Image (tube, rainbow, N blue to C red):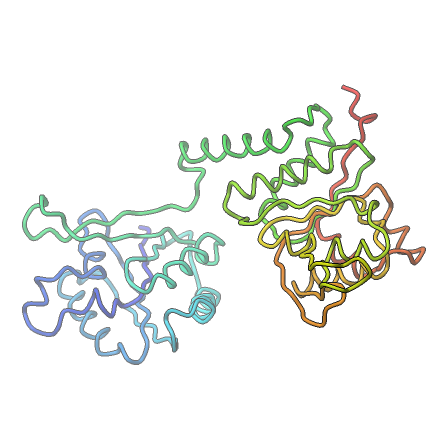
Length: 366
């Protein structure tokens, strides 16, 4: 017979009910988990810190009286701050990695009702990543209309979404809508283009890293960059604007001023301060078309702005900040430009994290 093993935290608030007989009048989630008619927990592993040791011992005795078939195992852990995500995740990750699982003989549950919200998130992430081959168990107190002495309910949540047809169908529909949105206005049945759109949907939409779009003039780089921005804006990933510039139109001092701004008097004719395109894109997206046409000074400044999110406006000794996502477009072979010494290798490495090749119109004759 398969056995059910559950993991959870001792609830320092919800599981505490004092030592007197009145403790049986309070709903306690860990006790509730072990009192279900349709669920037998054969082993319950409870995590607690040194401060909760006496609470664990009392809870263990109460479980033994209502569910003698449940073996209760205590796991003492060291968490200084139960609201610190990094500390809690590291602790639970170590617990999962060191645990021996027997999924062929045992079913595993993670009781998520107890513990901080941070702990619940960490449990979910570990289960979703399959570090813990478990389903989630959510206990809830009895409702007013329930029969007297009801122990409450337990809901089992399986993270394998393929088991939920409605959810799977909805995800498929949303993905198809996203792909159509990205392709809108760039009509094609070209398999290379469609594969590229699917790759963008999978990775670029979920990342804030720079994106490089390669393709000939007229391939739709600008349109696609704006579509990516609009999609991420609809998903509340941006709060700032879409800012676009063709770097081939920037020359000399005007290039530095247009991109990074300038202070009053920075050069002849600079009668007023200018924010610049990078600062204007703060919180949003900056599309630099023909990025290979930037001069050496602009490339150096751009690299600093991408890496540090800070830079100096032209003529200023005070740094300003701007947090934007960069999409760069080019018709040039930037690797060749790096080899020729006209494009910085470190900048190319920084903007080449996600690269997509847009087929030209000649390749999309259909």
